Length: 96
Image 1 (cartoon, rainbow, N blue to C red):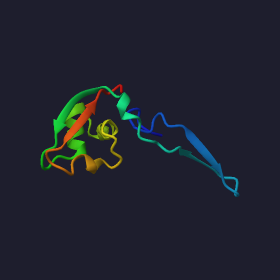
Image 2: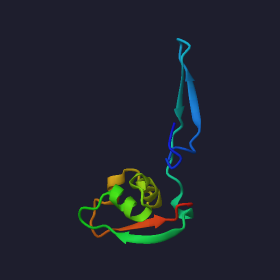
Image 3: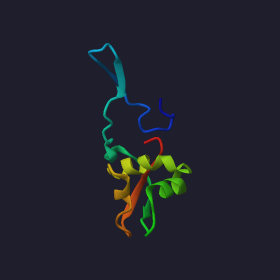
Image 4: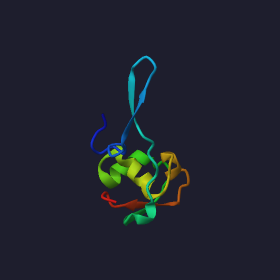
C-alpha cells in the first residue's frame, strides 16, 4: 500500500466493519515521534525560496523525505519549516 520509505510504512492497520458487511482497512493515526531521541547530524539555515521538498532533495536525495526533516523539528505542517527565512532547521540521521 505504501512505499518502503513512506512515513506510514510502520503504522499499524485497523479495520472497520460496515453494516453492509464491507470491511474498510485503514492506517491508524501517526503521531510525531519524540525528537529529543533523534541524533541531529546537521543544521541548515532557511533561505528565501526554500521549500520542504527542495531541502529534502539537497539533504537526502529524495524530495519525498521532507517528513523526516519535519519529524526532526517537531513540525506537523511541512511549510512551517520554511516560513521564516533565517531560522535554523535540524536534520536528524535517517535511522533516527
